[in-house]
Length: 45
View: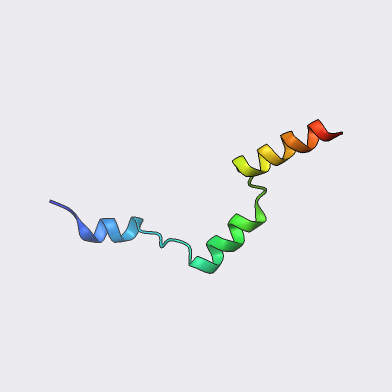
């Protein structure tokens, strides 16, 4: 059986949308589009 009291002790709520957006935008996330732009700009020099 599941011990709900024990599960509640281990529970941590997920980030709110605003907090998640701030965390994502704070990080330098490079996606495939960014990589392709860097590659094509490198060939123009």
